[in-house]
Image (cartoon, rainbow, N blue to C red; front, side, top):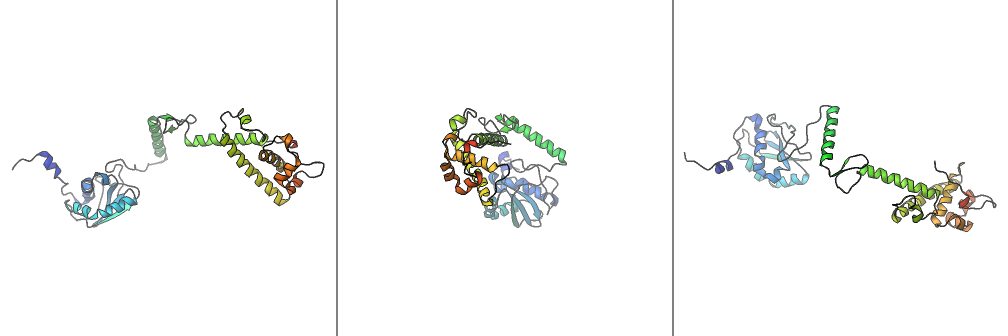
Amino acid sequence: MPLVPLRSALDGWLPGRRPASDALSTIAAAWASIVGPAVAAHSAPIALNGKSLVVATRSSAWSQQLQFLSVTILRGLAAIALDEPVERLVFRSGSLRAPRAGSVSPGAAAPMRQGIGRELEPEPAADAGEALERVRRRVTSARRRAPSACVACGAPVDAAVVRMCAPCEGGATRARTLQLERIVYLAPWLGVEDLRQQMPELSAAEFESARRTLLQRWWLVLERCRRSGKVSGSRLERQVASSYVLLQSRLPPDRVTPAIVRNLLGDELEAMLWPGSGDKANPADSSKTIR
């Protein structure tokens, strides 16, 4: 018998005949050589239903791509020594899982911790304690790999220039916005430069955003008051109207006149909030408290 180079012998080798119960493992072992490494990284045979092979794909686009390759795939499967040939292919897109080696029977699909070319989804945790421990290990591993950590909670962040994780950054933003809105409510005549004495990093855009939000919110309170025709016992509407007039007009309290109040609120609201000729609207007289 003539000798042949080892490389030539390996290039022409395909898995030989195996027991019927191991047919799916035989197909899985030859899958990369049938469809190619690139396609195999996004697909895997998961079950044999009679003469039909069920193939899992990573997405519907990959299922469509493999549909175009069906003739080539069936031809490659025919070259494998199987007890029962595969005649049909069924593609399922979604979670990609591969069969567990040595424990697959025809007609049944079994999950596998490792697929072709990459690690896939792990086995389900046995109980809540094991699941929690897995989460802890993943978080610890992510922290070690991350270039930096959140300065507030220590969670890993992707970029070295990011100081906080998304939840902490969102919480800090909400707290900062609330602080700004409280200051503006108490002293709505202050400008950006005045507010920077308490909030040094305040920008003009940030202030303008808070100003628009407060004006809209306050006007809803005043509009409900006008429609109901009632003022609450706490006189909250009067306090809100005072802040609304000062913030809308951008004038200090000593420059706001009854005419400006009527122009911004309307005669009806002015009469409801500052009734009586001797108690005309003067936002500077309205005390404000935050609870």
